Amino acid sequence: MFSKILAPIQTPMTDQMVFDRALTLAQQNQAGLMLLHVISPEMKGTPALPNPTLYRYPVITDELMQGYRQRWEEFENQGLEMLKSLAEKAQAAGVEVEFSQNIGNTGHVICDMAKTWQADLIVIRQPDRSKLDELFLGSISNYVLHHAICPVLAIPAE
Image: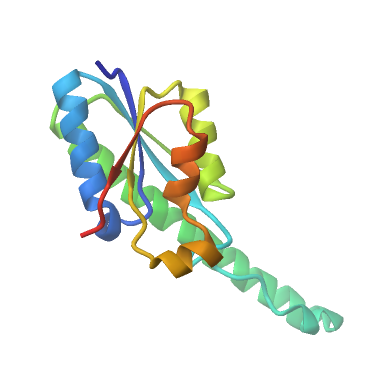
């Protein structure tokens, strides 16, 4: 029924159910699995650029930018290590798996990856925000549900 399943994973803690469900579906359908980690400037924990008010002082700016680059590389490496670890689990379960880490708006990146990779199904976590927060902040899963080119399975938050 499904031959390519896309599973966006932000952290193993919040998205373990997404990974488990996507892995089970991939096993049942003998489907390929794409694990996607999106680094977004809006995402909690993403390194922020240094304060622009200090740009008048070149020495401070250089040090701040060097520290920012270092934090950014560490953040990227953590994402890749998470993806590698999950990919190893999927391979051990007999599933053909790929992974990708992209930068951008999370909802847009998920929908673009689904289109580019020609996914048959996206398995995503339902938002754990209140309706009021969703109104003001938006929802990644809501965006994906309305813009994806394929069916979307939304897993309720625990």
